[in-house]
Amino acid sequence: MSRKEARVKKARQRKNMIIALLLIAAGLVLVITAGIMEASNYPWGVLFGTATQDADAIPDPSPIMLDPEDQGILVTAEITEPADTGETADVEDPDASAAEASPSADTELPGNIEDTASAPAVSKFVVLGTLKIPVLNVSQNLLEGSGKQMKYGVGHITSTAAPGRKGNCVVSGHRPYPFRYLDQLQQGDHITIKTEGVTYTYAVYESFEVLPTEVWVLNNIPGEDYVLTVITCTPYMVSSHRLIVRARLTDIDGKTPQEYYGDTSSEAGEPPAVSPEQGSLPAESTAPTETPALSETPVLSETPVLSETPVASEIPAPTEEAADPTAAPTGTMPEPVST
Image (tube, rainbow, N blue to C red):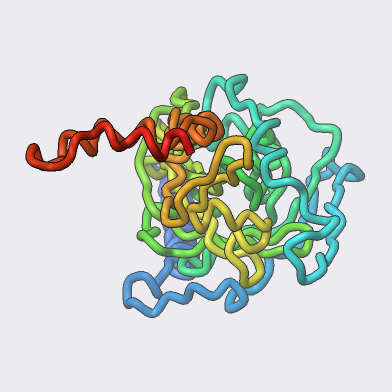
């Protein structure tokens, strides 16, 4: 090998070594960057027991910046501050959204990033408000729809109840972000949704995993009037299943749902009123589950008939059974009947 060839070979080896070192350095930068991002997003408060439940303690999400192909179709829902009463023009009937919800048409639960990327284009992106999970430091825009909307925040599944309304309100987000640590939620942790100027606070009560095809989780839940269901992929970076977190509505701008919507009967457990024609129920009877049976009891419904029957003619039977055999003959009883 000539000196020139040796010099060329050495230069080539040096070049290859530099390229290898640059690739290693780039890999280290990526690993360090990912570690920093992971550490910054990790809910350290949950680990050390210092997490807050106050949604105001974390900032609101940044305004949405649409991708170029989506420019010009961003719609922000009008924010209206309702009056401080239980009956306002801005508050819809809490039963209306539950009646309109029909999630049976859904065939698979959302949450997969690939599904979002391949989702069909939408005519407009409607921002409903914000969703926050204080203990996880999550603050996201809430959009209507669970297709391409999930590129920009958390999506509300249109076929389910509206936020804060009666029924099962279902929202979905991706597991890498923003719901990376959704599995860290514990019973009692708060999830808040602010929409139309009203803040709805939910408290977590259960979590479980299902297959993507188990769309029954979108249905209303027997015995639960106001529920929020949060869906994301699981396991992390695999997405073969869906993680389901459920929470109950406990507060609406400082009031209970019953106080806010004026639905005090369901909270107090009072039975429905009984009309005069049906008779009257005892004052101490307050169990709503037994009210129908009481209202159909023959004694109540036929009270007017009993009042027309001579009272004394009904009395002798029990009186004779309890009477002393040595007492005077019962023939004296007809006197009150003739009067």
